[in-house]
Image 1 (cartoon, rainbow, N blue to C red):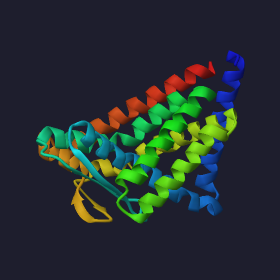
Image 2 (tube, helix red, strand yellow):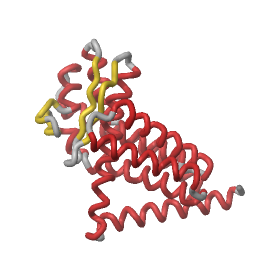
Image 3 (spheres, rainbow, N blue to C red):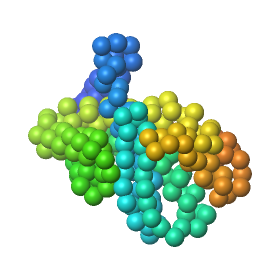
Image 4 (cartoon, rainbow, N blue to C red):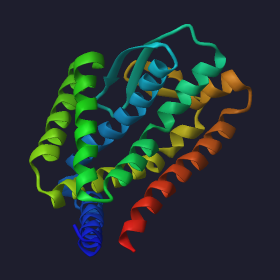
Length: 235
């Protein structure tokens, strides 16, 4: 594929992704579609917790999504204060990290197919290995099937549009729910519990709002890095 054609397709992917995003925000009849997008951002958040616990030597036991858009990742490990804080931070960085990698994947059609395929396989594993309730099983299985279908059977342009759209949505989710970064406790489908920044503060002493501010900055750096890598293709 020529550089000019790759640039043109990347621009088209951005414009379509932004148009759909605006439509979801401003057309009331499409409001229902916002619910799976909300669950998707929660899924990225909870996967950040679970996978980081796994990487640090713990056991990722289950991931539960709830109809109100909240979620909980359960893990078992003999972690110290620092490991607990790192797992808490990883959840908050889940959506911006996912957005970063999707922007990287969306730079051309080939990498878009690969990115959606990898994401589809990961979600299939979540549905089989870690889903803790029926909603999580169904949501992850359906999303995995759709992503794998797109990765293997959709044309290059559609695949790139889907990748960029997901990157945009996860990027927006990183900040549209930023108020969670500045609360000490949070209500989920399992009740009220210490928030992620509350857990970090308990481990590393500084007030929770300080950690919330630092994570906002880190999230912004990740998003800007992903956007910059994608914009380079458009030049």
